[in-house]
Length: 460
Ligand code: ADQ
Image (cartoon, rainbow, N blue to C red):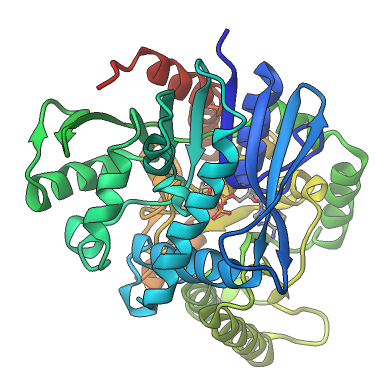
């Protein structure tokens, strides 16, 4: 069997419970087959020259972890700069937040070259290489330039924007050319696939050979929509853990006379938090029967705090939640509990299960695994209701959620009210359909689908 080599910005020990979606999914794939996982160590070294970084190898069960530290300058330009201050905002349709700085792109190329150099020495001729996410778009092109001929696939975890938005990135053609160095590109949704095809048709001298096959720059590339899923069994088992059970019991007791609404994410402007708080405010204003009862627990864990846009988002959220509590709260009830801290992953299933409604209302999201985790954590006999943004990739699959346009706060408030009042039979019926989808297209399905397609992709 060919060895699986996974490359992502960060790595994790696949034997331990990981915090985020990508780490859980990739860890699961590697644990099953064994292999090599390559990425940045997470360490930033002051005083080191840009483009340099020693390789560190470590064995974690059947997976070899290979990591490289970054110099301060590379971290600033590759990670904070081009990845999170250019690609992240533009790919989430936020051109207004992007900073096109010439130093960023050179750092991005330099780190991809560094990774390629360090990785090339570890590769075997029949390895299958699976590269993840927007930090590493040019990695295959760099490896190819060093003579690597292995099968290489790329999965984009974030959305691919419409052609004209992508064309606003000064290096858009180079980014696309870089993608054609892979044999397979996986995207989260059919919308993203449509954008890819639209871009190719409008911006490149290229041939569209079929719905999934494209030829440009002398290379044929297969592109498929393959929505990422969760590990339902792992998440259910997590729900049986002591911490999850205690959290559930504590929440049920504390909110026995109230209705609990829940939002959980990394603090990020793509997640639509200010508009969500405004919709919640309108719920309290327009449907006063919720006063003294509806309580929103909003967990927004710290993320990328040294990027400017995140600091101002934090201030905005503090001010909005403070204003709602000041205007509506009383001695025995505060409508918003805003938590800007990390919450242990083990507590999440208990929190999800105790909530009557989950608010998953991003302005744009590649997929959104919180929506799927919420569904998996529910009691099928008495399930909570998922209010989901139509702009999350997950909305293509989770049609039985209450789908909302998060920019329309009045309508979102209406949907929340509907969720709070939904009869048991309808809640059960919707949950059953959602769970079926979350189970069928789970993370194992996603991994198999990507790797089987990559293995069968004609090289060219
Ligand atoms: P993210 O933007 O990080 O991921 P998401 O898909 O929701 O978003 O995954 C987050 C994961 O981290 C979930 O497993 C969740 O339980 C956990 N998590 C989130 N907030 C947390 C908190 N406050 N405390 C503890 N755990 C928390 C990117 C893309 C998504 C895409 C995933 C996977 O932006 O669109 O779904 O990758 O491809």
